Image (cartoon, rainbow, N blue to C red):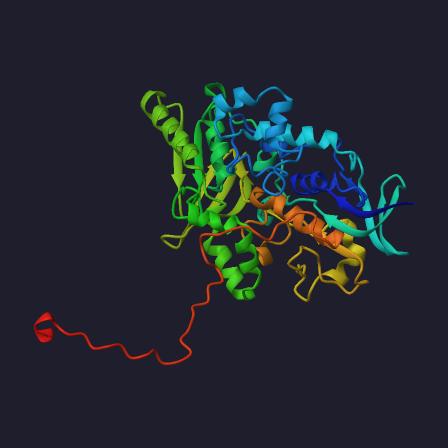
Length: 443
């Protein structure tokens, strides 16, 4: 049985960052187990022209170690693209090129082992024992879960899942027939807007009717203003952890448009395409953009899909017929099947993981054995947890905790907003001030 200081399960962007930051630390042996044969980043929705919503500096390593060889900038230099990229993109980066960067980093990291499906994790003799399909067994004192989120399809639609009822993450793998058909896109976040933009971009595959449903008050832009972006900086994570559970839940609801809104450039692209189709498209496309609606049921009837919507404004229900429905209804962190042997030792009475500030889990196992989570802690660490913004910082915090020492300095980030401000109070009565007099009185 192979022994390591820590084992990562999953090699998505989060654990890829951890692997890159751990690579030069020679006294920390590590292995990262990934079920896929190679790195892939949301292949089902890697649409042409889709761009990152964050700066390329929020890569695997730069915001913690800008000298690392695994930075996006070094990728551009290594590939001979750096000058062309600056001239073509400025600070913008396509998601497809960022996936190429991730693949480039993964290929250079010897700790990553592809085509390894983890079957179970149990408490072994002197560590956490990880068993893989094929009989491979590994032992480590720490485990880092980075298995990512699962697409969420509403329960009422799950039984119809297929080429005509699908999640947005499956668009390019399922490839539904949309040309000349009635298509509905449910969800007005970035993914929903990208799919609508994609459907409007190819005259040969243009639907006959497009309905875009938003449960919000409209089709709203992401809040990318500077003060809002302070929610995606380390000082706010520490502040958020210290709040009550009820307050954290309230804040997460209010902050959604900081991460789930649509980039303004994409909204303008969709709006312009609809305008041009209306003015010059000879009526080839009918479109309905409907806010304040929530899809509550889908049934197959008479060769079509009968969609029931709840109109939040008028407190009524409506129904319409479509041929294809694409649900852009987000993702959730599911408890990994391979962790079932330890579930009762890791979750509280509500089934929630109890996450410490260093991203380790509270549990009743040996104190010197740690289980960490990546992208599982939005409820305790804030809205930035599933975002790329803190990928490097979070990985550095996990790595420092595993090592029991400061490998990377992460506690010195400055903030403009004073989240933990405590006003100074007077401890005694102020000294009396001399009475003011007018110039006439002085005379």
